[in-house]
Structure formats: C-alpha cells, structure tokens
Amino acid sequence: MTVYTQVSEEVATALAERRPVVALETTLVSHGFSGGRGLTVAVESERRVRAAGAVPATAGILDGAIHIGLSSAELERFSAAGLSARKVGARDLAACLAQGAIGSLTVGGTMAVCRQVGIKFMGTGGIGGVHRGFADTLDISSDLLQLARTEAVVVSSGPKSLLDVAATGELLETLAIPVLGWQTATLPRFYTAAGGPPVSATVSDSPEVARICAAHWQLNAGGGLLLARPPVGGIDIDPLIDEAVARVSREHRSGQAVTPAILALLDELSDGRSVEVNRRLIEDNAGLAGEVAVAYTQLTTA
Ligand code: PSU
Ligand code: MN
Image (cartoon, rainbow, N blue to C red):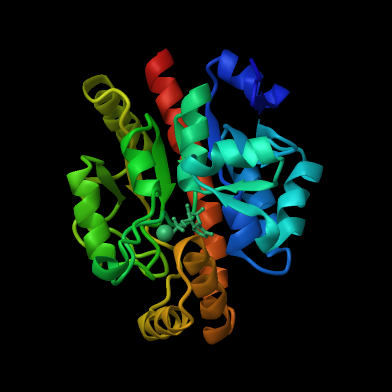
C-alpha cells in the first residue's frame, strides 16, 4: 500500500513523546500574500510556535506526498509557486497526490491531515465560512465541515470579514462547534474585533482553553473547536471590503479563486494596511496555538 504521509523527524519524535505540536497551513503562504511575503509570515509563525514551547508542523503536498513539518527549502517551494500551487481542501488531497502537483493545504485540508497523525492544535489567520450572497451561490467553505469532524482546536481571528460573519456564526452553532472567544464575548471579524455575533463561551487563559478541549473531546469524540482571538491593531475597512467583494463578484469569479482575489484587491485598496493586520494576526494566532498546546499537554500528562 502506498504511504502518502511523510512526517518530519522532529514532528514524528514530538508526537511519539506526546509533546505539544501545532499544525500550520500552506495556502496562506502561496495564495494569502503576494510577492513572497507569505514565506516571511510562515517562518515567523513557526518561530512563535517554538517560542511558546511547541513544535511547528507546517503541512503541504510535494512530489506526491503529504509533508508534515517542512524544511526551509520545502517551505520556499510553496511561496515560489504562488497562485500556481493548487489550493487543496480535503476533497482535493487524492487528486493532488496522484497527479504529483504542488498542493497548498487550506485550513480544512490541514485538518484532514492532522486527523491522520493525531495533531490536535492548529494556528491560522481566518477560517473559511459562509460567503456573502450564499443563498445564490451556495459558497460555503469546507473548512467548517472539517472543523466539525476533526478532534482539534483551531486558533483564528474568526471568519474573514469578506464573508457573511453572522451566517458563519449560525452554521458553527448548527455544526455544534464550540466557539471560544479569547478574552472577548463576540466573534472577531478578522480585520476588526468588533461587530460579530456572540461566542458560545468566553475564555480568559490557555489552561482554561485546555480544560474545555479535554472535556469536549471526552464528551464529543471526534469534534473540533474554534478559538477566536481578536486582532491586535485591527482596522475597520468594511467599505473597502464591500467594494472588493462587489468587484470580484462582477468579474464572475467563483469557487476557490474568490478568497485570494478579494484578499489581493483589499491589499491594493487599503494601501497595504489589510496585509499588515493579516500578517500580525496570523503570527499572534500561531503563538497562542503553541501556548494552548503546551497547556493541554501539561493538563493531560499531569
Ligand atoms: N486566512 C488568511 N489567508 C488565507 C486563508 C485564510 O489570512 O489565504 C485561506 C485558508 O487556507 C482558508 C481558505 O482555509 O483561505 C478558505 O478558502 P475558501 O473560502 O475558498 O474555502
Ligand atoms: Mn468557497
């Protein structure tokens, strides 16, 4: 039988020794930023995970294998590929592997991979969710479905504000995914902390998150949680988001191309401010995912 998954030695050892491991995605490296900036964000995110005392496991598909834990040369291949890399969710894994393409894993794709090797913590920027105008397009990110069926906690700054955040909040409730607000009572909207629907519980520190995860996994085996952390230095760019969403929909883009197109246009419309907030929150979330992974390990090995 073909073995598709290659876990780096560092990550494999950490998992075997039950030390904290944090998964990081590669879509934001290739599709989330332009001009190679995704690489800088990925390197800094890994550094933040390590600074918290955990081992980073950035995951992506290269040469017909799922690599969990990337060398710097491997990470560079995702950044160099840019939009030519495939954006790979759970349903795209098999085709990408069999066809030998470079595959950047989305949040959902990364979760599918985490499930295979037992990684329970992930850091990212914004999760995919219910798109505005969903009643016409039925565009709803498969990130939500993967979150519902993976025993992991994803640290993000909520759904990207280009989505319908209120509808995403409703679907998270329907899917029985706990939404933990990091020192906040409302779901952050990625670029800005304010204006989102209520979370299902507010949490104040990492040990508390760890206790909730442990209880949730005992009571709802196989289900995931969202830890939503408000961005530091957030900006209110709702009018620019409205404009970017309208323009991209006029261009009749659909499916996987929608999110990267809107992010790139927002970068332009905001004179780079959106990208700066995006970068910072991804790195901060990686650090928090590291902290939570460490707290959970302390709780469960005590
Ligand atoms: N957050 C970012 N930048 C990104 C993404 C999230 O700050 O590029 C990516 C993630 O990989 C997420 C994906 O899983 O966008 C969602 O895409 P879609 O809406 O097509 O499901
Ligand atoms: Mn979509």
